[in-house]
Length: 267
Ligand SMILES: NC(=O)c1ccc[n+]([C@@H]2O[C@H](COP(=O)([O-])OP(=O)(O)OC[C@H]3O[C@@H](n4cnc5c(N)ncnc54)[C@H](OP(=O)(O)O)[C@@H]3O)[C@@H](O)[C@H]2O)c1
Image (cartoon, rainbow, N blue to C red; front, top):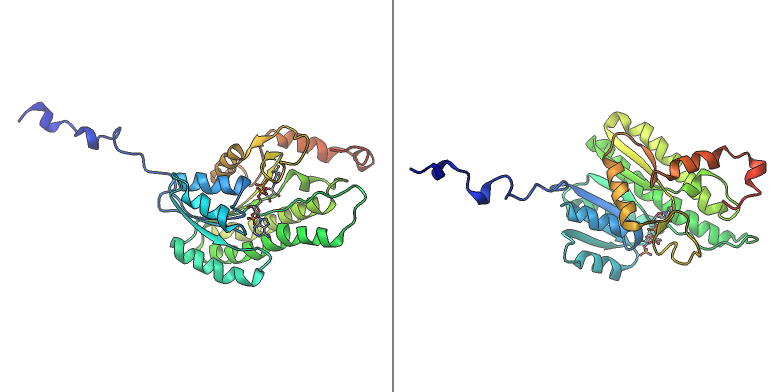
Protein backbone atom coordinates (compact mmCIF):
# COMPACT_ATOMS: atom_id res chain seq x y z
CA UNK A 1 0.00 0.00 0.00
CA UNK A 2 1.44 3.38 -0.85
CA UNK A 3 0.67 6.73 0.72
CA UNK A 4 -1.31 7.52 -2.39
CA UNK A 5 -3.81 4.74 -1.66
CA UNK A 6 -5.24 6.97 1.05
CA UNK A 7 -5.05 10.19 -0.96
CA UNK A 8 -8.42 11.35 -2.31
CA UNK A 9 -8.87 10.62 -6.01
CA UNK A 10 -8.28 13.94 -7.84
CA UNK A 11 -11.51 13.54 -9.81
CA UNK A 12 -13.60 13.09 -6.66
CA UNK A 13 -11.86 15.77 -4.57
CA UNK A 14 -14.13 18.66 -3.51
CA UNK A 15 -12.22 21.04 -5.79
CA UNK A 16 -12.76 18.85 -8.85
CA UNK A 17 -16.43 18.08 -8.22
CA UNK A 18 -18.80 20.61 -9.78
CA UNK A 19 -20.42 22.73 -7.07
CA UNK A 20 -24.09 21.83 -6.59
CA UNK A 21 -26.11 24.43 -8.47
CA UNK A 22 -28.22 26.77 -6.33
CA UNK A 23 -31.41 26.00 -8.17
CA UNK A 24 -30.95 22.25 -8.59
CA UNK A 25 -34.28 20.53 -7.96
CA UNK A 26 -36.17 23.82 -7.82
CA UNK A 27 -38.97 25.00 -10.12
CA UNK A 28 -39.77 28.52 -11.33
CA UNK A 29 -42.46 30.18 -13.44
CA UNK A 30 -41.92 33.53 -15.18
CA UNK A 31 -44.91 35.25 -16.79
CA UNK A 32 -43.76 37.88 -19.29
CA UNK A 33 -40.68 35.87 -20.22
CA UNK A 34 -40.13 36.55 -23.92
CA UNK A 35 -37.96 39.68 -23.63
CA UNK A 36 -36.34 42.17 -21.27
CA UNK A 37 -36.13 41.37 -17.58
CA UNK A 38 -38.41 38.33 -17.82
CA UNK A 39 -36.19 36.66 -20.44
CA UNK A 40 -33.08 37.45 -18.37
CA UNK A 41 -34.71 35.94 -15.29
CA UNK A 42 -35.43 32.75 -17.24
CA UNK A 43 -31.80 32.58 -18.45
CA UNK A 44 -30.35 33.11 -15.00
CA UNK A 45 -32.70 30.72 -13.24
CA UNK A 46 -32.10 27.98 -15.82
CA UNK A 47 -28.35 28.57 -15.54
CA UNK A 48 -28.65 28.05 -11.78
CA UNK A 49 -30.31 24.69 -12.38
CA UNK A 50 -33.98 25.59 -11.97
CA UNK A 51 -36.56 23.95 -14.20
CA UNK A 52 -38.29 27.03 -15.63
CA UNK A 53 -41.64 27.62 -17.30
CA UNK A 54 -41.52 30.68 -19.57
CA UNK A 55 -44.88 32.29 -20.42
CA UNK A 56 -45.66 35.11 -22.90
CA UNK A 57 -47.46 35.61 -26.21
CA UNK A 58 -44.51 35.36 -28.62
CA UNK A 59 -43.91 31.65 -29.13
CA UNK A 60 -40.86 32.20 -31.38
CA UNK A 61 -39.04 34.25 -28.72
CA UNK A 62 -39.85 31.67 -26.05
CA UNK A 63 -38.66 28.81 -28.26
CA UNK A 64 -35.42 30.68 -29.00
CA UNK A 65 -34.91 31.20 -25.26
CA UNK A 66 -35.47 27.51 -24.56
CA UNK A 67 -33.04 26.57 -27.35
CA UNK A 68 -30.13 28.73 -26.12
CA UNK A 69 -27.09 26.52 -25.56
CA UNK A 70 -26.90 27.27 -21.83
CA UNK A 71 -30.66 27.26 -21.37
CA UNK A 72 -30.96 24.18 -19.15
CA UNK A 73 -34.54 23.07 -18.59
CA UNK A 74 -36.82 25.74 -20.04
CA UNK A 75 -40.43 24.95 -20.99
CA UNK A 76 -42.14 27.46 -23.29
CA UNK A 77 -45.86 28.18 -22.97
CA UNK A 78 -47.40 30.70 -25.38
CA UNK A 79 -50.23 32.55 -23.66
CA UNK A 80 -51.87 35.98 -23.61
CA UNK A 81 -52.57 37.07 -20.02
CA UNK A 82 -55.82 38.61 -21.25
CA UNK A 83 -57.11 35.05 -21.71
CA UNK A 84 -57.82 34.77 -18.01
CA UNK A 85 -60.05 31.69 -18.40
CA UNK A 86 -57.01 29.72 -19.59
CA UNK A 87 -54.91 30.49 -16.52
CA UNK A 88 -56.03 27.87 -13.95
CA UNK A 89 -55.57 24.96 -16.42
CA UNK A 90 -52.31 26.35 -17.76
CA UNK A 91 -50.92 26.74 -14.25
CA UNK A 92 -51.89 23.13 -13.53
CA UNK A 93 -50.08 21.97 -16.71
CA UNK A 94 -47.00 23.99 -15.78
CA UNK A 95 -46.86 22.62 -12.25
CA UNK A 96 -47.19 19.11 -13.65
CA UNK A 97 -44.46 19.69 -16.27
CA UNK A 98 -42.06 21.12 -13.68
CA UNK A 99 -42.99 18.69 -10.91
CA UNK A 100 -44.03 21.49 -8.53
CA UNK A 101 -43.42 25.19 -8.08
CA UNK A 102 -41.09 27.14 -5.76
CA UNK A 103 -40.74 30.57 -7.35
CA UNK A 104 -43.17 32.64 -9.43
CA UNK A 105 -42.46 35.98 -11.10
CA UNK A 106 -45.05 38.20 -12.78
CA UNK A 107 -43.03 40.38 -15.17
CA UNK A 108 -45.59 40.92 -17.94
CA UNK A 109 -46.30 44.56 -18.61
CA UNK A 110 -47.03 47.15 -21.27
CA UNK A 111 -46.28 50.88 -21.30
CA UNK A 112 -47.57 52.49 -24.49
CA UNK A 113 -46.70 56.11 -25.22
CA UNK A 114 -49.37 58.43 -23.88
CA UNK A 115 -49.53 62.01 -25.11
CA UNK A 116 -49.74 64.91 -22.66
CA UNK A 117 -53.30 65.67 -23.77
CA UNK A 118 -54.40 62.12 -24.49
CA UNK A 119 -57.28 60.56 -22.55
CA UNK A 120 -57.79 57.27 -24.40
CA UNK A 121 -59.89 54.87 -22.38
CA UNK A 122 -59.34 51.88 -24.67
CA UNK A 123 -55.57 52.26 -24.53
CA UNK A 124 -55.64 52.83 -20.77
CA UNK A 125 -57.82 49.80 -20.04
CA UNK A 126 -55.57 47.62 -22.25
CA UNK A 127 -52.76 48.59 -19.87
CA UNK A 128 -54.91 47.79 -16.84
CA UNK A 129 -55.71 44.37 -18.34
CA UNK A 130 -52.07 43.28 -18.66
CA UNK A 131 -50.35 45.13 -15.81
CA UNK A 132 -53.06 44.56 -13.21
CA UNK A 133 -55.81 42.21 -14.44
CA UNK A 134 -53.34 39.63 -15.76
CA UNK A 135 -51.20 40.06 -12.66
CA UNK A 136 -54.13 39.29 -10.37
CA UNK A 137 -55.44 36.47 -12.57
CA UNK A 138 -52.04 34.72 -12.47
CA UNK A 139 -51.02 35.58 -8.92
CA UNK A 140 -54.28 34.49 -7.25
CA UNK A 141 -54.04 30.79 -8.23
CA UNK A 142 -50.30 30.77 -7.48
CA UNK A 143 -51.05 32.27 -4.05
CA UNK A 144 -53.68 29.55 -3.47
CA UNK A 145 -51.14 26.87 -4.41
CA UNK A 146 -48.41 28.33 -2.17
CA UNK A 147 -50.93 28.78 0.66
CA UNK A 148 -51.84 25.10 0.52
CA UNK A 149 -48.26 23.86 0.15
CA UNK A 150 -47.09 26.23 2.92
CA UNK A 151 -44.18 27.66 0.97
CA UNK A 152 -43.01 29.44 -2.13
CA UNK A 153 -41.93 32.88 -3.27
CA UNK A 154 -44.05 35.32 -5.28
CA UNK A 155 -42.24 38.17 -7.04
CA UNK A 156 -44.17 40.99 -8.70
CA UNK A 157 -42.46 43.52 -10.96
CA UNK A 158 -43.95 46.89 -10.15
CA UNK A 159 -42.21 50.16 -10.96
CA UNK A 160 -40.88 53.33 -9.44
CA UNK A 161 -43.61 54.86 -11.63
CA UNK A 162 -46.15 53.60 -9.07
CA UNK A 163 -44.66 55.72 -6.29
CA UNK A 164 -46.23 58.97 -7.47
CA UNK A 165 -48.99 60.18 -9.83
CA UNK A 166 -46.95 61.53 -12.72
CA UNK A 167 -48.40 63.76 -15.44
CA UNK A 168 -46.89 61.59 -18.16
CA UNK A 169 -48.22 58.19 -17.14
CA UNK A 170 -51.55 58.38 -15.30
CA UNK A 171 -52.64 54.78 -15.88
CA UNK A 172 -49.27 53.00 -16.14
CA UNK A 173 -48.33 54.45 -12.72
CA UNK A 174 -51.77 53.62 -11.32
CA UNK A 175 -51.50 49.95 -12.41
CA UNK A 176 -48.11 49.65 -10.72
CA UNK A 177 -49.33 51.34 -7.52
CA UNK A 178 -52.36 49.03 -7.39
CA UNK A 179 -50.20 45.96 -8.06
CA UNK A 180 -47.89 46.95 -5.18
CA UNK A 181 -50.87 47.33 -2.82
CA UNK A 182 -52.30 43.96 -3.92
CA UNK A 183 -48.90 42.33 -3.31
CA UNK A 184 -48.66 43.92 0.15
CA UNK A 185 -52.03 42.42 1.05
CA UNK A 186 -50.93 38.99 -0.17
CA UNK A 187 -47.71 39.32 1.83
CA UNK A 188 -49.69 40.00 5.00
CA UNK A 189 -52.11 37.17 4.25
CA UNK A 190 -49.50 34.56 3.39
CA UNK A 191 -46.80 35.36 5.97
CA UNK A 192 -48.17 32.81 8.42
CA UNK A 193 -48.03 30.14 5.67
CA UNK A 194 -44.28 30.77 5.15
CA UNK A 195 -44.88 32.25 1.70
CA UNK A 196 -42.74 35.25 0.71
CA UNK A 197 -44.19 38.01 -1.43
CA UNK A 198 -41.67 40.42 -2.92
CA UNK A 199 -42.40 43.68 -4.75
CA UNK A 200 -39.70 44.87 -7.13
CA UNK A 201 -39.70 48.50 -8.23
CA UNK A 202 -37.25 48.89 -11.10
CA UNK A 203 -35.96 52.31 -12.06
CA UNK A 204 -35.00 52.56 -15.72
CA UNK A 205 -33.88 49.33 -17.35
CA UNK A 206 -32.62 48.86 -20.91
CA UNK A 207 -35.25 46.58 -22.43
CA UNK A 208 -37.52 46.65 -25.49
CA UNK A 209 -40.02 48.58 -23.35
CA UNK A 210 -37.69 51.56 -23.02
CA UNK A 211 -35.78 51.18 -26.31
CA UNK A 212 -37.71 53.99 -28.00
CA UNK A 213 -37.18 56.52 -25.20
CA UNK A 214 -34.75 59.36 -25.96
CA UNK A 215 -33.04 59.45 -22.63
CA UNK A 216 -32.91 56.96 -19.78
CA UNK A 217 -32.01 58.18 -16.30
CA UNK A 218 -29.49 56.02 -14.39
CA UNK A 219 -30.26 52.98 -16.60
CA UNK A 220 -29.09 49.44 -15.90
CA UNK A 221 -29.06 46.42 -18.19
CA UNK A 222 -31.79 43.80 -18.04
CA UNK A 223 -29.11 41.30 -17.02
CA UNK A 224 -28.09 43.40 -14.00
CA UNK A 225 -31.73 44.05 -13.03
CA UNK A 226 -32.52 40.33 -13.20
CA UNK A 227 -29.52 39.46 -11.01
CA UNK A 228 -30.69 41.95 -8.39
CA UNK A 229 -34.28 40.72 -8.57
CA UNK A 230 -33.16 37.14 -7.89
CA UNK A 231 -30.88 38.24 -5.10
CA UNK A 232 -33.72 40.21 -3.44
CA UNK A 233 -36.09 37.27 -3.87
CA UNK A 234 -33.74 35.20 -1.67
CA UNK A 235 -32.90 37.85 0.90
CA UNK A 236 -34.96 38.13 4.06
CA UNK A 237 -33.92 41.79 4.25
CA UNK A 238 -36.31 43.21 1.69
CA UNK A 239 -39.97 42.65 0.86
CA UNK A 240 -40.16 45.76 -1.29
CA UNK A 241 -37.07 46.84 -3.16
CA UNK A 242 -36.13 49.41 -5.76
CA UNK A 243 -33.79 47.98 -8.42
CA UNK A 244 -31.09 49.12 -8.46
CA UNK A 245 -31.05 50.25 -4.84
CA UNK A 246 -29.92 53.78 -5.71
CA UNK A 247 -33.51 54.48 -6.77
CA UNK A 248 -34.65 54.09 -3.15
CA UNK A 249 -33.31 57.47 -1.90
CA UNK A 250 -34.52 59.05 -5.14
CA UNK A 251 -37.97 57.66 -4.47
CA UNK A 252 -37.94 58.94 -0.88
CA UNK A 253 -37.19 62.44 -2.17
CA UNK A 254 -39.76 62.23 -4.98
CA UNK A 255 -42.45 61.02 -2.58
CA UNK A 256 -41.73 63.89 -0.18
CA UNK A 257 -42.26 66.65 -2.78
CA UNK A 258 -45.54 68.47 -2.05
CA UNK A 259 -48.19 68.06 -4.77
CA UNK A 260 -48.19 71.76 -5.61
CA UNK A 261 -44.50 71.55 -6.51
CA UNK A 262 -44.61 68.04 -7.97
CA UNK A 263 -47.10 69.05 -10.65
CA UNK A 264 -44.60 71.63 -11.94
CA UNK A 265 -41.98 68.93 -12.55
CA UNK A 266 -41.56 66.28 -15.23
CA UNK A 267 -39.93 63.66 -13.02
N1 LIG B 1 -37.81 48.67 -18.56
C1 LIG B 1 -38.01 49.49 -17.54
O1 LIG B 1 -37.35 50.55 -17.42
C2 LIG B 1 -39.03 49.14 -16.48
C3 LIG B 1 -39.05 49.96 -15.33
C4 LIG B 1 -39.96 49.64 -14.33
C5 LIG B 1 -40.79 48.56 -14.46
N2 LIG B 1 -40.77 47.79 -15.60
C6 LIG B 1 -41.67 46.65 -15.66
O2 LIG B 1 -40.88 45.49 -15.80
C7 LIG B 1 -41.66 44.47 -16.42
C8 LIG B 1 -40.86 43.85 -17.55
O3 LIG B 1 -40.72 44.82 -18.58
P1 LIG B 1 -39.44 44.94 -19.54
O4 LIG B 1 -38.87 46.27 -19.30
O5 LIG B 1 -38.61 43.73 -19.38
O6 LIG B 1 -40.17 45.03 -20.95
P2 LIG B 1 -40.42 44.02 -22.17
O7 LIG B 1 -39.14 43.50 -22.69
O8 LIG B 1 -41.33 44.76 -23.07
O9 LIG B 1 -41.17 42.77 -21.49
C9 LIG B 1 -42.55 42.74 -21.29
C10 LIG B 1 -42.98 41.30 -21.24
O10 LIG B 1 -44.39 41.29 -20.99
C11 LIG B 1 -44.97 40.36 -21.89
N3 LIG B 1 -46.36 40.72 -22.18
C12 LIG B 1 -46.85 41.91 -22.58
N4 LIG B 1 -48.17 41.80 -22.83
C13 LIG B 1 -48.50 40.50 -22.58
C14 LIG B 1 -49.70 39.77 -22.69
N5 LIG B 1 -50.86 40.33 -23.08
N6 LIG B 1 -49.68 38.44 -22.37
C15 LIG B 1 -48.53 37.85 -21.97
N7 LIG B 1 -47.36 38.50 -21.85
C16 LIG B 1 -47.35 39.81 -22.16
C17 LIG B 1 -44.11 40.47 -23.15
O11 LIG B 1 -44.24 39.29 -23.92
P3 LIG B 1 -45.08 39.14 -25.28
O12 LIG B 1 -45.04 40.45 -25.99
O13 LIG B 1 -44.35 38.04 -26.00
O14 LIG B 1 -46.43 38.72 -24.86
C18 LIG B 1 -42.72 40.56 -22.53
O15 LIG B 1 -42.24 39.28 -22.28
C19 LIG B 1 -42.95 45.13 -16.88
O16 LIG B 1 -43.96 44.85 -15.94
C20 LIG B 1 -42.62 46.62 -16.83
O17 LIG B 1 -43.78 47.38 -16.62
C21 LIG B 1 -39.90 48.06 -16.61
